[in-house]
Image (cartoon, rainbow, N blue to C red; front, top):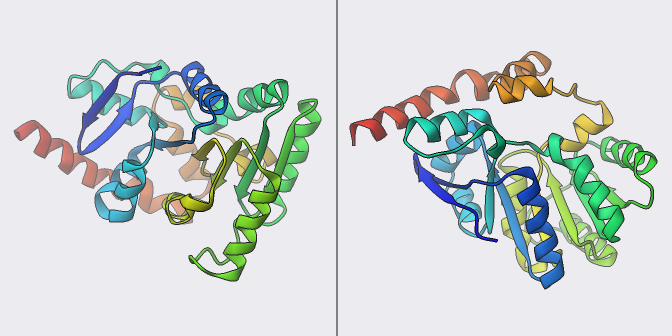
Length: 250
């Protein structure tokens, strides 16, 4: 499939729905190809313009879905026909995708979260979804290229041979890790998923889904983790507003 592509404020996104995402994942596995799947939200928009490595990651990504309603609002303000259905998060799609993986017999590997958190989330998902093949490994290791710990992580993933590799180590660490290790990653689908397993496990409260559709999910997350997220949600938008003003002037 060839979804519509829109570029604005220096970034590019694909106008995908959640069903489209599942179709693309199945397409990659059926064709035995590799799709790197990324996402954009306000935080990634900021880091994209401040981190050259993030720009390299997005350049090698096959598809980029929209993870935050503000990106939809910005795109529409700049004349692109994006809709609410084009915004979804990994919290929305993780369970439906795991159900599809169980039906199809796809192996899934999740790398990330604190020790014990991903394992607890995997146990929850396996109890909910019969036949799910899901392995996990925490993200607290030395991820430097060439480091022995990193090598052992890559070996663990390679031995398991997942069709889908989800990497949730926070942005931009997860994207940089994927980029650094891409030659040694053989999963058909490699997708950055942030704090997905933290939400599944209950380690972090899941924001009400209606808040996401209104573009207010950030508020729930800020209240849950103010010390970690205050800069992201209170300062970074100022840079985005400058980008928007510059775009409208041009």
